[in-house]
Amino acid sequence: MVDEAQFKKMAEMISSMRKTAEGLHGMADTFPAVKRNTARMLASLKMLEINVCDLNDPREQG
Amino acid sequence: MVDHPIYWNPVIETLPRQKLRALQLKKFKRIFAWTYDHSRFHRALYDQAGVRPEDIRTFEDIRAVPKVEKSMMRDIQRKDPFPYGDALCVPLEEVTEFRQTSGTTGQPVYQPDTWQDWEWWAECWACILWAQGYRPSDRVFLPFGYNIFVAFWAGHYAAEKIGCEVVPGGVLDTKARILKMQELRATAMMATPTYVLGMADTARKMGIDPAALSIRRITCAGEPGAGIPSTKKRMQDAWGAKVFDHAGATEIGAWSFECAEQPFGMHVNEGMFLVEIEDIETGEIIEEPGRRGKMVITAFDRQAQPCVRFDSKDVIEWDSEPCRCGRTFRLIKGGVVGRADDITKVKGVLLAPSAIEEVVRSIEGLGDEYEVIVDKVGDSDRISLKVELLPEARGNRKAVEAALVDQLRLKTNLRYDLEFNDYGQLPRYEVKAKRFKDLRKDH
Image (cartoon, rainbow over all chains, first blue to last red; front, side):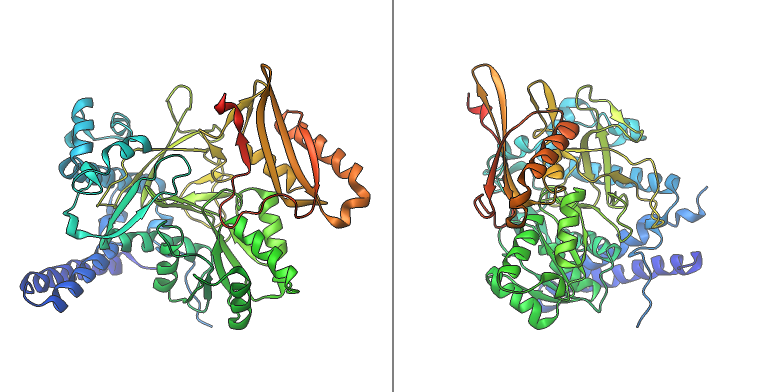
């Protein structure tokens, strides 16, 4: 089972990955291989956000 | 053997109810705002009702959001941005997938999905398959045509996501599919209940006992059946496998699943969907278990053509008991028990067609196939039921008939004109069956 600290760390890492993927995507208008592959990565990152980040660590909430 | 955790998402699937509801409210607000800002069709609907995103603060506020029906989607499509019309929320070039509904209830509705939406489909199904015990060691056979309907596409991608080996069985005919499953020792498959029973029948005619194949789990979708106890038993007995129900729809997504505990019901994936049950007559929202109503559903994360308070016409009820699996996702008792537009009055009695199937398939001596015709004789309703007597039951016909009449009266409160046919005489359906014919609508 995932503990709270791990969960929070996961959320932070996912946010960081999004920033990196968005940055790479933004640079790649003339590089279709990077543009399209990072588009797919961003879609997968959304799934990670649904599974982790959307919770906004509710275990800390009352 | 690797010991895998039992939940796809061990945090959300066991989240305490209060926190799950808080998550749902947050996600509803987000998809409502997205839809309001990006869909001309929905915005016009919401403006007419005087509901804006900032008005949504509680679940009671959600009830003020107007519902969308399938007929409304039909009306706005086939226009620019072609062919989706005003409900499209993304630029057309971001749409990567086209599917459409089956058209059994009228003109098909088109469903666009972005690549993110398509990943979301696979994500919803991954939760389902994991809950049903699919693991990376499974070899999953898809005996399905891979066509314009969404059925099982997401099952394929989800099985891949989970790490299973996927064998696409499209194009092969039924016999070739059975032989391929046998050759490769497939451990799981996905199909409609009609096809599961049909394949078993074909296998037996080929001299193959389907229970002797390696299939140990079957996921059903596309039509009722896996939630009807007698149909489920027939499939499980035929294949020597556990059979699991799932309900989803093209316009909605894969919103529910039966878990490995087989609790006579299905979990709603409450992390991805908001299900409300509405009294069919009063429109009041039903919170308590044990009262049937019509499902109104919202998909929290679908973007190209959102599903927000979609009136699905599926009839469901909440179960009062939590599931042994430990998930806090609520169960709908018995799964989808019917459709609001299928439930009809015959001779003044409310009838759900699934009740007839439950009776027919609970009686030994009767084949899987049956046909119901409702028509009028003068001003009176008449309901006829055609069944098939299995060859081995020919000497026992009177007892079978007596049991059938008795159970029909008990379970449906109706008398039927019965017609017994020899095995094999009734129509066979390939994928989805249409066994209930109400001819009164033609009057």
